Length: 560
View 1 (cartoon, one colour):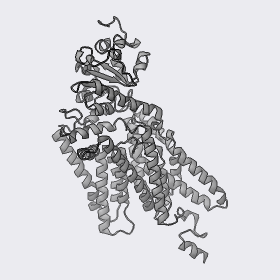
View 2 (cartoon, rainbow, N blue to C red; view 1 turned 90 degrees about the vertical axis):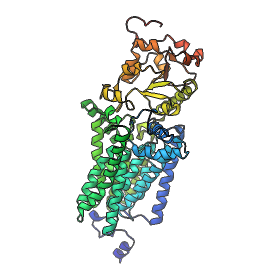
View 3 (cartoon, rainbow, N blue to C red; view 1 turned 120 degrees about the horizontal axis):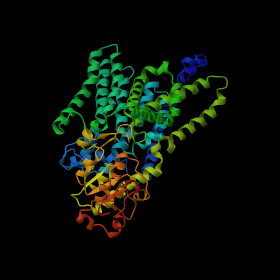
């Protein structure tokens, strides 16, 4: 009678072998949905708080996409500088999505927040659904994983606060794998529809970021291991993505006249230094998410491994790829879309471990410690140090400096002026000045012909040609160092800026500007008398003859 009652309630009987026990069942559909709502509320509250701490600004690179979308919505085409067709982005789907939103009158800064925020909320919902599809509708995996993801600092930051395309990438990948797993008991026709849907979503992932193609490899293996109609299912999985990629390639060739985006030429360069830096980047992620990696060890692979292994394999392939290309300069941004998958596996491992302990003689004694440790783990993952980007002081200061710099330039620069810089997001977007990208992401010459310092600079920003930039004679230079640091003799952290500032001829042509509030270092071309007239004397005369100590080589340039 006891065994029948236990089975009726969905709980394992005492006679059930421990190895066959599932994660303890959740108490009803209503409770599971309530936990999902709580997870979404927690994520939204933390996201809004972090966003407010950033003064509602986003990560600098988000504004590169916005500049392309803004110009396209205004009728100039998907260009960074009006009249120059250069593909300096790798998130075509985001440009394609943001453009009509801006065209309908939604401010770009709001549109990018809406897109990233909705993607983040959708990813949490999909983790809830995926947990149920992996472990069963009565399992705690879905609700627990959704809550853990909502509290994960790395995940939170790159959705609403940072507003980057990786949030949409996480959404499309999770949805694709959800359909790929298939609904239990579905008939053949429904299974084919799900495979086609998975192909569409994985294709959208590749349009969001090309490196998402790595997740398609294990997805294809899953389809090829199907027992029935494997060729048809493989075709249904691959056809949508191939169609989308082919369409984008035709568009690229017709509009930009190149087989590859300009960013490929600017970023390519692999050597031992790059790989070493990539391994350090990977280690940073492992340390930040150490609790989840430990939990993955206890994941019940025999029971659910067949369902979880495909998308975890995609993560492993992607992590190896990240290490090979040297990582990213924006903290853990490029790991964002793998965090939900890691959360599912890690949380599943802890729940499985708890169930094993519960079945022992001292199981009752571990309940309270397990609950305390679980809460402490969630707090750690939420903690600002769970993602180095969450250390708000330097990040907030840097973003605010760029916005202040743009605001000052708007009041002093002529609309026809040109500005040369390396921070190509916030400042160009809010000023709409013609911009010379000193590291070549938006400049074909620097991307292809510039000096390569692969392994010595910031990832993806390791080409430059200062002779080429100076020959263009831009009216303004903006450098990633504060005027106070520069005047005190501090050296820029960017090699290409150091090379520029070591040139006496540069200081002969560009005096330092001193705005009345904190900005990045701004320099204005001396022979642009019309531009200097717009400056108050105190904003530049006191630094007219300034040359940093490390720039003094030989004789002092004439006029200094």
